[in-house]
Image (tube, rainbow, N blue to C red; front, side, top):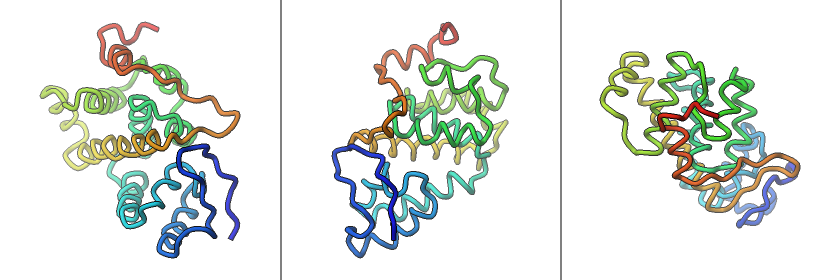
Amino acid sequence: MTTPTPLTRDRLAYRPYDTLPEDAKPLADYILKISSAGLAGPYNALLRSPKMAKPCLELLDYLRFHSSISKRITEFAILIQARVGNAPFEWWAHERIGRREGLDDRIIKPLWEAYRPRDMDLEERLVFEVCSRLSIEQRIPDALWAEALGHFGEAALIDLVSVSGVYSMVSMLLNAVEVSVPEGAEALPKLSAALIKERMLGENSHDH
């Protein structure tokens, strides 16, 4: 089986398919069917613990492809988490996917710099507020929860919250092993937690 050129220069050496332990190969076969990064990116780390990775990937598969929210909204939520988590590889991978699902520069350019996008529609605003406040403050204010619940309903709102939580784990994993973006790609700039909070949640977050 051929493997793609690895995209990482990280703390864990890239392992080609043929060098994987036997208990990791069935999971690697699944990953190669769905991954644009081959066995690189987060998968290089996840394959170190295949028993953990298998249910994790099943959850990721549900949240990305089968949940009760649209793929466009899912990718918006993932990009918010990548920005909050200063996760360059997560941003690089999901900006491309998000654009395919309909996100454009109106959303992506300000979010790259941790600003709240301008002129969002109701659903976009709710996604931004729910995901950014939950990721940064670990809470959703009562009024925002009620508004989001009225718009999305219980199942979709729980799925949205779960996307933020699971991709927080992914960004932590990527950052822990210092997964880099491919050579030639522009890396998401690292911003301080205080600046991210000020720009995304502050009263003047539109001013940029």
